Image (cartoon, rainbow, N blue to C red; front, top):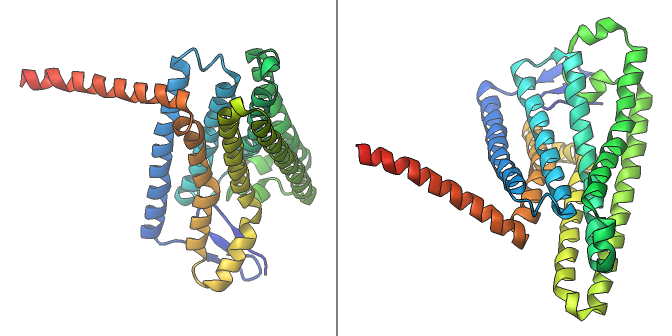
Length: 325
């Protein structure tokens, strides 16, 4: 028996033609949770981006340029997926053209994350294992070129889905309304096989890059005693990147996990689906601020300065008001 679950907590069994949907109270609580999480992460990400652009030392450093690119990318991805989540409850079905836009942006930004992780791991590898040539190899110009390459590699495979759909579907199809799932818009079966092939290729390459850079940095830490501390920090950073990659991979096994949990806890499919959504699509977005915003000594210093300056401004605004009273 096949099943299809949408982001709005709706589960359809085509063979039975039944539809399970949340009660109003449950739907309200779920949407409240995801919106609150989005607000918290948006504040954190916005603070990180503001801290980055306020200090020239960051946007002249390839390491932090790649980091802030991932923060912005994750912020876009989170905004799009949560918007789709909320719209699926409010309208259930939306216009196909809008759905295409949302789906493609979500796919591009989701695929960007692991490729960006590979770029950050390579930069750390060069910094530790070839420090004398790091400044020549990892320039600001080349870093922006690398970001352009990341977007090209991530956009090219999936933009073909749109071209194939434009070629195979009538124009009236794009004026219809559908429940916004990828398989409801890009319906050609060949596209699903193509996506699986590219996903395996991309994640395999990123996994091998992370393993290679981690091992090389580990060996470098043993060989050069004076650089042990910086090499250890770089190694731990790449290890956390590996955790991020593993969490990204959860999206591929989540349907199987949902099926197993549904067999163990029958009748709880909507709760399982929502928990899976939070773990697979929301939780990984907390890791980027932790890796650099909290762990990195340099960024943490300026991050604290920014927060303290904001508090001082708030006190200055509140102070005169009390004096007037």
